[in-house]
Image (tube, rainbow, N blue to C red; front, side):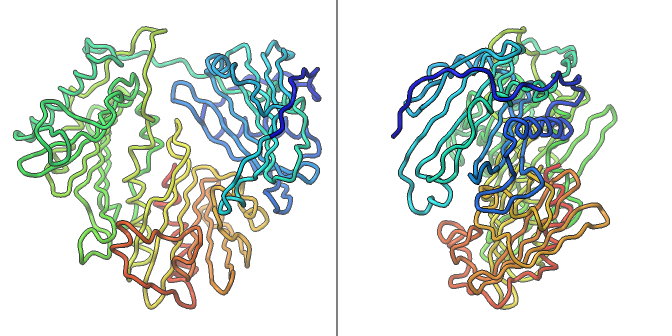
Length: 591
Protein backbone atom coordinates (compact mmCIF):
# COMPACT_ATOMS: atom_id res chain seq x y z
CA UNK A 1 0.00 0.00 0.00
CA UNK A 2 1.36 3.42 -0.93
CA UNK A 3 0.92 6.27 1.53
CA UNK A 4 1.93 9.78 0.60
CA UNK A 5 1.99 13.26 2.07
CA UNK A 6 -0.45 16.12 1.99
CA UNK A 7 0.49 18.82 -0.50
CA UNK A 8 -0.98 22.07 -1.76
CA UNK A 9 -1.60 22.93 -5.36
CA UNK A 10 -1.60 26.31 -6.97
CA UNK A 11 -4.02 27.55 -9.60
CA UNK A 12 -5.83 25.03 -11.82
CA UNK A 13 -4.11 24.03 -15.06
CA UNK A 14 -7.00 25.50 -17.04
CA UNK A 15 -8.95 28.63 -16.27
CA UNK A 16 -12.73 28.43 -15.90
CA UNK A 17 -14.93 29.26 -18.83
CA UNK A 18 -16.58 32.61 -19.29
CA UNK A 19 -19.83 33.13 -17.37
CA UNK A 20 -22.51 30.84 -18.74
CA UNK A 21 -25.77 32.26 -20.06
CA UNK A 22 -28.87 32.06 -17.90
CA UNK A 23 -30.17 28.52 -17.60
CA UNK A 24 -33.76 28.00 -18.72
CA UNK A 25 -34.02 24.17 -18.88
CA UNK A 26 -36.23 22.25 -16.44
CA UNK A 27 -34.18 20.38 -13.83
CA UNK A 28 -33.89 16.68 -14.63
CA UNK A 29 -35.40 16.94 -18.12
CA UNK A 30 -33.67 15.46 -21.16
CA UNK A 31 -32.90 18.99 -22.37
CA UNK A 32 -31.33 19.79 -19.00
CA UNK A 33 -29.20 16.64 -19.04
CA UNK A 34 -28.12 17.41 -22.61
CA UNK A 35 -27.09 20.91 -21.54
CA UNK A 36 -25.02 19.69 -18.59
CA UNK A 37 -23.52 16.85 -20.65
CA UNK A 38 -22.32 19.33 -23.27
CA UNK A 39 -20.80 21.59 -20.62
CA UNK A 40 -19.04 18.67 -18.89
CA UNK A 41 -17.66 17.28 -22.15
CA UNK A 42 -16.41 20.72 -23.22
CA UNK A 43 -14.79 21.33 -19.82
CA UNK A 44 -13.10 17.92 -19.81
CA UNK A 45 -11.66 18.35 -23.29
CA UNK A 46 -10.40 21.84 -22.44
CA UNK A 47 -8.76 20.67 -19.23
CA UNK A 48 -7.36 17.45 -20.76
CA UNK A 49 -6.64 18.18 -24.46
CA UNK A 50 -5.25 14.66 -25.02
CA UNK A 51 -8.52 13.02 -23.90
CA UNK A 52 -10.18 10.56 -26.30
CA UNK A 53 -13.40 8.58 -25.93
CA UNK A 54 -12.90 4.84 -25.66
CA UNK A 55 -13.91 1.88 -23.52
CA UNK A 56 -11.20 -0.35 -22.06
CA UNK A 57 -9.28 -2.12 -24.85
CA UNK A 58 -11.76 -0.85 -27.47
CA UNK A 59 -11.09 1.47 -30.42
CA UNK A 60 -11.38 5.25 -30.00
CA UNK A 61 -14.71 6.68 -31.18
CA UNK A 62 -15.65 10.21 -32.19
CA UNK A 63 -18.89 10.27 -30.20
CA UNK A 64 -18.49 11.13 -26.49
CA UNK A 65 -19.20 8.01 -24.44
CA UNK A 66 -20.93 9.83 -21.59
CA UNK A 67 -24.05 8.58 -19.79
CA UNK A 68 -26.02 10.77 -17.39
CA UNK A 69 -29.15 10.79 -15.29
CA UNK A 70 -31.06 12.93 -12.85
CA UNK A 71 -30.50 11.97 -9.22
CA UNK A 72 -31.78 13.14 -5.85
CA UNK A 73 -35.40 13.81 -5.07
CA UNK A 74 -38.12 15.77 -6.89
CA UNK A 75 -37.58 18.88 -4.77
CA UNK A 76 -33.79 18.80 -5.14
CA UNK A 77 -32.88 17.28 -8.50
CA UNK A 78 -29.15 16.71 -9.05
CA UNK A 79 -26.94 15.23 -11.77
CA UNK A 80 -24.69 12.23 -12.19
CA UNK A 81 -22.65 11.35 -15.29
CA UNK A 82 -20.00 8.82 -16.19
CA UNK A 83 -17.83 8.05 -19.19
CA UNK A 84 -14.98 5.88 -20.45
CA UNK A 85 -11.99 7.83 -21.72
CA UNK A 86 -8.39 7.30 -22.80
CA UNK A 87 -5.50 9.67 -22.08
CA UNK A 88 -1.98 8.97 -23.36
CA UNK A 89 -2.94 5.36 -23.99
CA UNK A 90 -4.32 4.82 -20.49
CA UNK A 91 -7.96 3.75 -20.12
CA UNK A 92 -9.89 5.59 -17.41
CA UNK A 93 -13.38 5.98 -15.99
CA UNK A 94 -14.62 9.46 -15.07
CA UNK A 95 -17.64 10.23 -12.87
CA UNK A 96 -19.15 13.65 -12.14
CA UNK A 97 -21.82 14.32 -9.51
CA UNK A 98 -23.62 17.58 -8.76
CA UNK A 99 -25.87 17.88 -5.71
CA UNK A 100 -27.84 20.81 -4.31
CA UNK A 101 -27.30 19.81 -0.67
CA UNK A 102 -23.59 20.50 -0.85
CA UNK A 103 -22.97 22.08 2.55
CA UNK A 104 -24.13 18.99 4.43
CA UNK A 105 -22.04 16.68 2.27
CA UNK A 106 -18.99 18.93 2.52
CA UNK A 107 -19.11 18.96 6.30
CA UNK A 108 -19.84 15.24 6.59
CA UNK A 109 -16.89 14.32 4.37
CA UNK A 110 -14.36 16.63 6.02
CA UNK A 111 -13.01 13.95 8.33
CA UNK A 112 -12.26 11.62 5.42
CA UNK A 113 -10.82 14.19 3.02
CA UNK A 114 -7.33 12.70 3.22
CA UNK A 115 -7.48 8.92 3.51
CA UNK A 116 -4.56 6.69 4.38
CA UNK A 117 -4.20 5.84 0.68
CA UNK A 118 -3.73 9.49 -0.34
CA UNK A 119 -0.47 10.48 -1.97
CA UNK A 120 -1.62 14.05 -2.51
CA UNK A 121 -4.49 16.00 -0.97
CA UNK A 122 -5.46 19.45 0.22
CA UNK A 123 -7.86 22.39 0.04
CA UNK A 124 -7.87 25.77 -1.67
CA UNK A 125 -10.21 28.56 -2.74
CA UNK A 126 -11.50 28.81 -6.31
CA UNK A 127 -11.75 31.86 -8.58
CA UNK A 128 -15.37 32.52 -7.58
CA UNK A 129 -14.87 31.81 -3.89
CA UNK A 130 -15.55 28.07 -4.16
CA UNK A 131 -14.20 25.82 -1.45
CA UNK A 132 -12.10 23.24 -3.26
CA UNK A 133 -10.95 19.88 -1.94
CA UNK A 134 -8.75 17.52 -3.95
CA UNK A 135 -7.10 14.15 -3.49
CA UNK A 136 -4.97 11.67 -5.39
CA UNK A 137 -4.63 8.13 -4.04
CA UNK A 138 -3.35 4.64 -4.80
CA UNK A 139 -5.09 1.55 -3.48
CA UNK A 140 -4.44 -2.17 -3.76
CA UNK A 141 -6.77 -5.08 -3.09
CA UNK A 142 -7.09 -8.80 -3.61
CA UNK A 143 -9.55 -9.57 -6.38
CA UNK A 144 -11.17 -13.02 -6.81
CA UNK A 145 -10.31 -14.56 -10.19
CA UNK A 146 -13.88 -14.32 -11.50
CA UNK A 147 -13.87 -10.53 -11.03
CA UNK A 148 -10.39 -9.77 -12.37
CA UNK A 149 -11.72 -8.67 -15.76
CA UNK A 150 -13.98 -6.11 -14.07
CA UNK A 151 -11.93 -4.90 -11.10
CA UNK A 152 -8.19 -4.10 -11.01
CA UNK A 153 -6.04 -5.23 -8.08
CA UNK A 154 -4.33 -1.82 -8.08
CA UNK A 155 -6.05 1.49 -8.86
CA UNK A 156 -4.96 5.10 -9.02
CA UNK A 157 -7.67 7.66 -8.33
CA UNK A 158 -7.91 11.44 -8.42
CA UNK A 159 -10.87 13.56 -7.46
CA UNK A 160 -11.69 17.21 -7.03
CA UNK A 161 -14.73 18.72 -5.30
CA UNK A 162 -15.98 22.30 -5.33
CA UNK A 163 -18.56 23.73 -2.93
CA UNK A 164 -20.04 26.77 -4.62
CA UNK A 165 -21.53 29.85 -2.99
CA UNK A 166 -25.06 28.74 -3.93
CA UNK A 167 -24.60 25.51 -1.95
CA UNK A 168 -24.16 23.13 -4.86
CA UNK A 169 -21.35 20.60 -4.67
CA UNK A 170 -19.54 19.25 -7.73
CA UNK A 171 -17.27 16.21 -7.49
CA UNK A 172 -15.23 14.78 -10.38
CA UNK A 173 -13.52 11.41 -9.92
CA UNK A 174 -11.14 9.78 -12.41
CA UNK A 175 -9.63 6.31 -11.93
CA UNK A 176 -7.55 3.74 -13.79
CA UNK A 177 -9.07 0.42 -14.86
CA UNK A 178 -5.96 -1.78 -15.09
CA UNK A 179 -3.46 -2.55 -12.33
CA UNK A 180 -0.39 -1.66 -14.41
CA UNK A 181 -1.39 1.90 -15.32
CA UNK A 182 -0.51 5.20 -13.68
CA UNK A 183 -2.97 8.07 -13.74
CA UNK A 184 -1.96 10.50 -16.54
CA UNK A 185 -4.13 13.38 -15.22
CA UNK A 186 -3.20 15.94 -12.55
CA UNK A 187 -5.71 17.03 -9.92
CA UNK A 188 -5.38 20.60 -11.16
CA UNK A 189 -6.96 19.53 -14.43
CA UNK A 190 -9.94 18.13 -12.53
CA UNK A 191 -10.27 21.35 -10.54
CA UNK A 192 -10.63 23.25 -13.81
CA UNK A 193 -13.74 21.20 -14.58
CA UNK A 194 -15.51 21.57 -11.23
CA UNK A 195 -15.05 25.36 -11.20
CA UNK A 196 -16.28 25.75 -14.79
CA UNK A 197 -19.30 28.06 -14.57
CA UNK A 198 -21.11 26.32 -17.43
CA UNK A 199 -21.19 23.04 -15.48
CA UNK A 200 -24.16 23.94 -13.30
CA UNK A 201 -27.59 22.75 -12.29
CA UNK A 202 -30.69 24.52 -13.50
CA UNK A 203 -32.50 26.51 -10.81
CA UNK A 204 -35.45 24.74 -9.23
CA UNK A 205 -38.80 26.33 -10.13
CA UNK A 206 -40.75 28.08 -7.41
CA UNK A 207 -43.00 25.62 -5.58
CA UNK A 208 -46.67 25.66 -6.45
CA UNK A 209 -48.71 27.10 -3.57
CA UNK A 210 -50.29 24.27 -1.62
CA UNK A 211 -54.02 23.85 -1.93
CA UNK A 212 -56.03 24.59 1.18
CA UNK A 213 -56.37 21.42 3.23
CA UNK A 214 -58.91 20.35 5.82
CA UNK A 215 -56.40 17.90 7.33
CA UNK A 216 -55.29 19.09 10.76
CA UNK A 217 -52.25 16.83 11.21
CA UNK A 218 -48.81 17.70 9.79
CA UNK A 219 -47.05 15.53 7.19
CA UNK A 220 -44.14 13.52 8.55
CA UNK A 221 -45.53 13.13 12.09
CA UNK A 222 -46.70 10.04 13.96
CA UNK A 223 -50.15 11.60 14.27
CA UNK A 224 -50.42 11.91 10.50
CA UNK A 225 -49.24 8.32 10.00
CA UNK A 226 -52.02 7.18 12.35
CA UNK A 227 -54.53 9.29 10.39
CA UNK A 228 -53.55 7.63 7.10
CA UNK A 229 -53.67 4.16 8.67
CA UNK A 230 -57.20 4.83 9.92
CA UNK A 231 -58.30 6.33 6.59
CA UNK A 232 -57.08 3.27 4.65
CA UNK A 233 -58.63 0.87 7.17
CA UNK A 234 -62.01 2.57 6.97
CA UNK A 235 -61.90 2.75 3.18
CA UNK A 236 -61.18 -0.96 2.92
CA UNK A 237 -63.94 -1.86 5.38
CA UNK A 238 -66.45 0.27 3.50
CA UNK A 239 -65.95 -1.97 0.47
CA UNK A 240 -65.27 -5.29 2.25
CA UNK A 241 -67.17 -5.51 5.56
CA UNK A 242 -65.18 -8.49 6.93
CA UNK A 243 -61.78 -6.96 6.13
CA UNK A 244 -59.14 -7.51 8.87
CA UNK A 245 -55.46 -6.61 9.14
CA UNK A 246 -53.09 -9.49 10.04
CA UNK A 247 -49.66 -9.68 11.64
CA UNK A 248 -48.28 -11.55 8.61
CA UNK A 249 -49.55 -13.41 5.55
CA UNK A 250 -52.15 -15.81 6.95
CA UNK A 251 -51.32 -14.69 10.52
CA UNK A 252 -53.35 -13.49 13.49
CA UNK A 253 -55.66 -10.48 13.32
CA UNK A 254 -54.17 -7.04 14.06
CA UNK A 255 -56.03 -3.83 14.97
CA UNK A 256 -53.73 -1.76 12.76
CA UNK A 257 -51.72 -2.43 9.59
CA UNK A 258 -48.28 -4.02 9.94
CA UNK A 259 -45.93 -3.05 7.10
CA UNK A 260 -42.30 -3.78 6.33
CA UNK A 261 -41.07 -0.20 6.75
CA UNK A 262 -42.90 1.58 9.59
CA UNK A 263 -40.86 4.76 9.08
CA UNK A 264 -42.11 5.00 5.50
CA UNK A 265 -45.34 6.53 6.80
CA UNK A 266 -43.32 9.46 8.15
CA UNK A 267 -42.32 10.64 4.69
CA UNK A 268 -43.41 14.23 4.16
CA UNK A 269 -43.93 14.13 0.40
CA UNK A 270 -44.30 10.39 -0.27
CA UNK A 271 -45.73 8.59 2.79
CA UNK A 272 -45.96 4.84 2.22
CA UNK A 273 -47.47 1.85 3.99
CA UNK A 274 -45.44 -1.02 2.58
CA UNK A 275 -46.85 -4.54 2.13
CA UNK A 276 -49.33 -4.68 5.01
CA UNK A 277 -51.08 -8.06 5.14
CA UNK A 278 -54.83 -8.58 5.50
CA UNK A 279 -57.61 -11.12 5.33
CA UNK A 280 -61.11 -10.97 3.85
CA UNK A 281 -63.01 -14.05 4.95
CA UNK A 282 -60.56 -16.90 4.47
CA UNK A 283 -58.54 -15.23 1.71
CA UNK A 284 -55.25 -13.45 2.40
CA UNK A 285 -53.54 -10.58 0.64
CA UNK A 286 -51.08 -7.73 0.96
CA UNK A 287 -51.57 -4.04 0.22
CA UNK A 288 -49.18 -1.16 -0.32
CA UNK A 289 -50.37 2.44 -0.26
CA UNK A 290 -48.30 5.46 -1.26
CA UNK A 291 -49.28 9.11 -1.66
CA UNK A 292 -47.10 11.37 -3.81
CA UNK A 293 -47.22 15.16 -3.51
CA UNK A 294 -45.78 15.80 -7.00
CA UNK A 295 -48.19 13.37 -8.57
CA UNK A 296 -48.07 14.66 -12.14
CA UNK A 297 -44.32 13.98 -12.39
CA UNK A 298 -44.75 10.49 -10.93
CA UNK A 299 -47.60 9.69 -13.31
CA UNK A 300 -45.70 10.89 -16.40
CA UNK A 301 -42.53 8.82 -15.83
CA UNK A 302 -44.34 5.59 -14.91
CA UNK A 303 -44.58 2.79 -17.48
CA UNK A 304 -47.58 3.64 -19.66
CA UNK A 305 -50.40 1.20 -20.28
CA UNK A 306 -49.27 -1.36 -22.88
CA UNK A 307 -50.74 -0.79 -26.31
CA UNK A 308 -50.56 -4.34 -27.66
CA UNK A 309 -50.46 -7.96 -26.52
CA UNK A 310 -51.95 -9.64 -23.48
CA UNK A 311 -50.84 -6.86 -21.10
CA UNK A 312 -52.88 -4.25 -23.02
CA UNK A 313 -56.07 -6.10 -22.13
CA UNK A 314 -55.30 -5.70 -18.43
CA UNK A 315 -54.57 -1.96 -18.21
CA UNK A 316 -57.00 0.93 -18.55
CA UNK A 317 -56.89 4.70 -18.14
CA UNK A 318 -60.08 6.50 -17.13
CA UNK A 319 -60.74 10.24 -16.87
CA UNK A 320 -63.48 11.34 -14.47
CA UNK A 321 -65.51 14.56 -14.37
CA UNK A 322 -63.62 17.04 -12.23
CA UNK A 323 -60.18 16.16 -13.58
CA UNK A 324 -59.24 12.92 -11.79
CA UNK A 325 -57.32 10.38 -13.90
CA UNK A 326 -57.13 6.72 -12.96
CA UNK A 327 -54.81 4.00 -14.29
CA UNK A 328 -55.68 0.43 -13.29
CA UNK A 329 -53.48 -2.57 -14.13
CA UNK A 330 -53.72 -6.28 -13.59
CA UNK A 331 -50.26 -7.87 -13.69
CA UNK A 332 -49.53 -11.19 -15.39
CA UNK A 333 -48.72 -14.51 -13.79
CA UNK A 334 -45.20 -15.89 -13.98
CA UNK A 335 -44.24 -19.01 -15.87
CA UNK A 336 -45.37 -22.19 -14.14
CA UNK A 337 -47.77 -20.56 -11.69
CA UNK A 338 -49.86 -23.70 -12.22
CA UNK A 339 -48.51 -27.18 -13.04
CA UNK A 340 -50.01 -26.98 -16.55
CA UNK A 341 -49.03 -23.36 -17.17
CA UNK A 342 -46.42 -22.64 -19.83
CA UNK A 343 -47.73 -19.21 -20.83
CA UNK A 344 -48.51 -16.05 -18.85
CA UNK A 345 -52.07 -15.10 -17.93
CA UNK A 346 -53.83 -12.41 -15.92
CA UNK A 347 -53.16 -12.57 -12.17
CA UNK A 348 -55.07 -11.39 -9.10
CA UNK A 349 -52.52 -8.63 -8.42
CA UNK A 350 -53.56 -5.03 -9.11
CA UNK A 351 -51.77 -1.68 -9.44
CA UNK A 352 -54.06 1.36 -9.15
CA UNK A 353 -53.07 5.03 -9.57
CA UNK A 354 -55.41 7.92 -8.90
CA UNK A 355 -54.08 11.29 -10.08
CA UNK A 356 -56.17 13.83 -8.21
CA UNK A 357 -57.21 17.26 -9.52
CA UNK A 358 -54.92 18.90 -6.92
CA UNK A 359 -51.88 17.19 -8.54
CA UNK A 360 -51.30 14.56 -5.87
CA UNK A 361 -51.17 10.85 -6.67
CA UNK A 362 -52.54 7.87 -4.75
CA UNK A 363 -50.97 4.50 -5.53
CA UNK A 364 -52.50 1.26 -4.34
CA UNK A 365 -50.81 -2.08 -4.95
CA UNK A 366 -52.68 -5.28 -4.11
CA UNK A 367 -51.20 -8.79 -4.05
CA UNK A 368 -53.32 -11.89 -3.54
CA UNK A 369 -53.25 -15.55 -4.59
CA UNK A 370 -57.05 -15.79 -4.74
CA UNK A 371 -59.19 -12.65 -5.14
CA UNK A 372 -59.86 -11.33 -1.64
CA UNK A 373 -60.71 -7.95 -3.19
CA UNK A 374 -61.91 -7.34 -6.73
CA UNK A 375 -60.42 -4.80 -9.13
CA UNK A 376 -63.57 -2.68 -8.70
CA UNK A 377 -63.17 -2.66 -4.90
CA UNK A 378 -59.48 -1.74 -5.19
CA UNK A 379 -60.31 1.15 -7.50
CA UNK A 380 -62.89 2.54 -5.10
CA UNK A 381 -60.37 2.36 -2.24
CA UNK A 382 -57.73 4.20 -4.27
CA UNK A 383 -60.27 6.94 -5.10
CA UNK A 384 -61.41 7.35 -1.48
CA UNK A 385 -61.49 11.10 -0.65
CA UNK A 386 -60.00 10.55 2.83
CA UNK A 387 -56.71 9.29 1.37
CA UNK A 388 -55.10 12.72 1.09
CA UNK A 389 -51.79 14.29 2.03
CA UNK A 390 -51.42 16.50 5.07
CA UNK A 391 -49.86 19.99 4.81
CA UNK A 392 -46.06 20.10 4.83
CA UNK A 393 -44.32 21.13 8.06
CA UNK A 394 -43.11 24.73 8.44
CA UNK A 395 -40.09 25.78 6.41
CA UNK A 396 -36.84 24.71 8.04
CA UNK A 397 -38.37 21.83 9.99
CA UNK A 398 -36.63 18.46 9.78
CA UNK A 399 -38.25 16.15 7.24
CA UNK A 400 -38.16 12.44 6.54
CA UNK A 401 -37.67 10.80 3.16
CA UNK A 402 -37.24 7.03 3.28
CA UNK A 403 -38.66 5.53 0.10
CA UNK A 404 -38.03 6.51 -3.48
CA UNK A 405 -41.11 8.35 -4.72
CA UNK A 406 -41.39 6.56 -8.04
CA UNK A 407 -39.57 3.46 -9.22
CA UNK A 408 -40.09 0.68 -6.70
CA UNK A 409 -43.86 0.67 -7.18
CA UNK A 410 -43.74 -0.22 -10.87
CA UNK A 411 -41.72 -3.45 -10.84
CA UNK A 412 -44.83 -5.53 -11.54
CA UNK A 413 -46.03 -3.22 -14.30
CA UNK A 414 -42.67 -3.27 -16.08
CA UNK A 415 -42.27 -7.03 -15.72
CA UNK A 416 -45.78 -7.55 -17.09
CA UNK A 417 -45.03 -5.45 -20.18
CA UNK A 418 -41.79 -7.32 -20.87
CA UNK A 419 -43.40 -10.73 -20.34
CA UNK A 420 -46.30 -9.92 -22.65
CA UNK A 421 -43.94 -8.66 -25.37
CA UNK A 422 -41.96 -11.91 -25.22
CA UNK A 423 -45.22 -13.88 -25.23
CA UNK A 424 -46.36 -12.04 -28.37
CA UNK A 425 -43.11 -12.56 -30.27
CA UNK A 426 -42.87 -16.25 -29.33
CA UNK A 427 -46.52 -17.41 -29.29
CA UNK A 428 -45.67 -21.12 -29.14
CA UNK A 429 -43.36 -23.25 -27.03
CA UNK A 430 -42.29 -22.37 -23.49
CA UNK A 431 -41.04 -19.00 -22.27
CA UNK A 432 -39.76 -17.71 -18.95
CA UNK A 433 -38.73 -14.21 -17.96
CA UNK A 434 -37.04 -13.20 -14.70
CA UNK A 435 -36.33 -9.67 -13.43
CA UNK A 436 -32.55 -9.46 -13.18
CA UNK A 437 -31.50 -5.97 -12.17
CA UNK A 438 -32.47 -2.35 -12.25
CA UNK A 439 -30.75 0.92 -11.54
CA UNK A 440 -31.00 4.66 -11.12
CA UNK A 441 -34.21 4.91 -9.16
CA UNK A 442 -34.07 8.71 -9.04
CA UNK A 443 -36.53 11.55 -9.57
CA UNK A 444 -37.35 10.28 -13.07
CA UNK A 445 -37.87 6.70 -11.93
CA UNK A 446 -35.80 3.72 -13.04
CA UNK A 447 -33.12 4.42 -15.65
CA UNK A 448 -32.42 0.77 -16.46
CA UNK A 449 -34.35 -2.50 -16.32
CA UNK A 450 -32.93 -5.91 -17.17
CA UNK A 451 -34.63 -9.28 -17.61
CA UNK A 452 -33.17 -12.71 -18.20
CA UNK A 453 -35.34 -14.94 -20.34
CA UNK A 454 -35.40 -18.41 -21.87
CA UNK A 455 -37.29 -19.81 -24.86
CA UNK A 456 -37.81 -23.45 -25.89
CA UNK A 457 -39.67 -24.13 -29.12
CA UNK A 458 -39.45 -26.33 -32.21
CA UNK A 459 -36.50 -28.35 -30.96
CA UNK A 460 -34.50 -25.18 -30.28
CA UNK A 461 -33.65 -23.51 -26.97
CA UNK A 462 -31.66 -20.54 -25.78
CA UNK A 463 -31.46 -17.94 -23.09
CA UNK A 464 -30.99 -14.23 -23.34
CA UNK A 465 -31.35 -10.83 -21.78
CA UNK A 466 -33.56 -7.80 -22.36
CA UNK A 467 -32.08 -4.45 -21.29
CA UNK A 468 -34.23 -1.32 -21.30
CA UNK A 469 -32.47 2.03 -20.78
CA UNK A 470 -34.21 5.36 -20.37
CA UNK A 471 -31.20 7.19 -21.79
CA UNK A 472 -28.25 5.30 -23.33
CA UNK A 473 -24.73 6.68 -23.17
CA UNK A 474 -24.52 7.48 -26.88
CA UNK A 475 -26.25 7.35 -30.23
CA UNK A 476 -25.84 3.77 -31.40
CA UNK A 477 -24.33 2.63 -34.68
CA UNK A 478 -22.08 -0.20 -35.78
CA UNK A 479 -19.14 2.12 -35.05
CA UNK A 480 -20.21 3.05 -31.50
CA UNK A 481 -21.97 -0.03 -30.11
CA UNK A 482 -18.66 -1.48 -28.90
CA UNK A 483 -18.20 1.52 -26.60
CA UNK A 484 -21.28 0.82 -24.47
CA UNK A 485 -20.53 0.57 -20.73
CA UNK A 486 -19.45 -3.02 -19.95
CA UNK A 487 -21.13 -2.91 -16.54
CA UNK A 488 -24.51 -2.52 -18.23
CA UNK A 489 -23.99 -5.04 -21.04
CA UNK A 490 -22.05 -7.71 -19.17
CA UNK A 491 -20.36 -10.30 -21.40
CA UNK A 492 -22.41 -9.26 -24.43
CA UNK A 493 -20.32 -9.83 -27.54
CA UNK A 494 -20.92 -6.63 -29.48
CA UNK A 495 -18.76 -7.75 -32.41
CA UNK A 496 -19.71 -9.75 -35.47
CA UNK A 497 -21.76 -9.08 -38.59
CA UNK A 498 -23.32 -5.67 -37.94
CA UNK A 499 -26.02 -3.83 -39.84
CA UNK A 500 -27.77 -0.57 -39.02
CA UNK A 501 -30.84 1.23 -40.26
CA UNK A 502 -33.44 3.84 -39.33
CA UNK A 503 -37.12 2.89 -39.16
CA UNK A 504 -39.95 5.11 -40.46
CA UNK A 505 -40.78 6.02 -36.84
CA UNK A 506 -37.28 7.50 -36.45
CA UNK A 507 -35.97 4.70 -34.24
CA UNK A 508 -32.50 3.37 -35.01
CA UNK A 509 -31.88 -0.40 -35.33
CA UNK A 510 -28.45 -2.02 -34.91
CA UNK A 511 -28.28 -5.79 -35.49
CA UNK A 512 -25.28 -7.99 -34.65
CA UNK A 513 -24.82 -11.69 -35.39
CA UNK A 514 -21.92 -13.27 -33.50
CA UNK A 515 -20.57 -16.82 -33.62
CA UNK A 516 -18.29 -17.23 -30.61
CA UNK A 517 -16.93 -20.72 -29.89
CA UNK A 518 -19.38 -22.52 -32.15
CA UNK A 519 -22.52 -20.85 -30.78
CA UNK A 520 -24.78 -18.30 -32.46
CA UNK A 521 -25.77 -15.06 -30.71
CA UNK A 522 -28.24 -12.47 -31.96
CA UNK A 523 -28.00 -8.96 -30.49
CA UNK A 524 -30.46 -6.29 -31.59
CA UNK A 525 -30.63 -2.68 -30.40
CA UNK A 526 -33.54 -0.36 -31.05
CA UNK A 527 -33.05 3.27 -30.01
CA UNK A 528 -35.48 6.19 -29.91
CA UNK A 529 -34.28 9.63 -31.06
CA UNK A 530 -34.01 10.64 -27.35
CA UNK A 531 -31.64 7.64 -26.76
CA UNK A 532 -34.23 5.51 -24.98
CA UNK A 533 -32.88 2.08 -25.90
CA UNK A 534 -33.77 -1.62 -25.84
CA UNK A 535 -31.22 -4.39 -26.36
CA UNK A 536 -32.27 -8.02 -26.80
CA UNK A 537 -29.59 -10.71 -26.90
CA UNK A 538 -30.26 -14.44 -27.25
CA UNK A 539 -28.07 -17.49 -27.92
CA UNK A 540 -28.55 -21.12 -28.94
CA UNK A 541 -26.70 -22.69 -26.00
CA UNK A 542 -28.76 -22.33 -22.80
CA UNK A 543 -26.85 -22.23 -19.52
CA UNK A 544 -23.36 -22.44 -20.95
CA UNK A 545 -21.75 -19.70 -18.89
CA UNK A 546 -22.91 -16.53 -20.63
CA UNK A 547 -24.12 -13.41 -18.85
CA UNK A 548 -27.69 -14.11 -19.93
CA UNK A 549 -27.90 -17.58 -18.34
CA UNK A 550 -31.02 -18.37 -16.37
CA UNK A 551 -30.63 -19.65 -12.79
CA UNK A 552 -30.51 -23.41 -12.35
CA UNK A 553 -31.85 -23.63 -8.82
CA UNK A 554 -34.72 -22.26 -6.74
CA UNK A 555 -38.16 -21.69 -8.20
CA UNK A 556 -37.04 -21.65 -11.83
CA UNK A 557 -34.96 -24.82 -11.43
CA UNK A 558 -38.02 -26.71 -10.24
CA UNK A 559 -40.23 -25.54 -13.11
CA UNK A 560 -38.07 -25.61 -16.21
CA UNK A 561 -37.49 -29.00 -17.89
CA UNK A 562 -34.14 -30.54 -17.03
CA UNK A 563 -31.43 -31.11 -19.61
CA UNK A 564 -32.60 -28.55 -22.15
CA UNK A 565 -30.28 -28.54 -25.15
CA UNK A 566 -29.94 -25.95 -27.87
CA UNK A 567 -29.97 -26.41 -31.62
CA UNK A 568 -28.19 -24.96 -34.62
CA UNK A 569 -29.70 -21.49 -34.15
CA UNK A 570 -31.34 -19.49 -31.36
CA UNK A 571 -35.02 -20.37 -30.75
CA UNK A 572 -36.10 -16.96 -32.05
CA UNK A 573 -35.27 -15.81 -35.56
CA UNK A 574 -33.35 -12.60 -36.08
CA UNK A 575 -36.59 -11.02 -37.29
CA UNK A 576 -38.35 -12.07 -34.07
CA UNK A 577 -35.53 -10.70 -31.92
CA UNK A 578 -35.77 -7.42 -33.83
CA UNK A 579 -39.55 -7.37 -33.33
CA UNK A 580 -39.05 -7.94 -29.59
CA UNK A 581 -36.52 -5.10 -29.25
CA UNK A 582 -38.79 -2.80 -31.27
CA UNK A 583 -41.97 -3.84 -29.47
CA UNK A 584 -43.85 -0.64 -28.50
CA UNK A 585 -44.38 -1.87 -24.95
CA UNK A 586 -40.61 -2.30 -24.49
CA UNK A 587 -39.22 0.67 -26.41
CA UNK A 588 -41.68 2.94 -24.56
CA UNK A 589 -41.43 1.17 -21.20
CA UNK A 590 -39.28 3.95 -19.68
CA UNK A 591 -40.79 7.16 -21.12
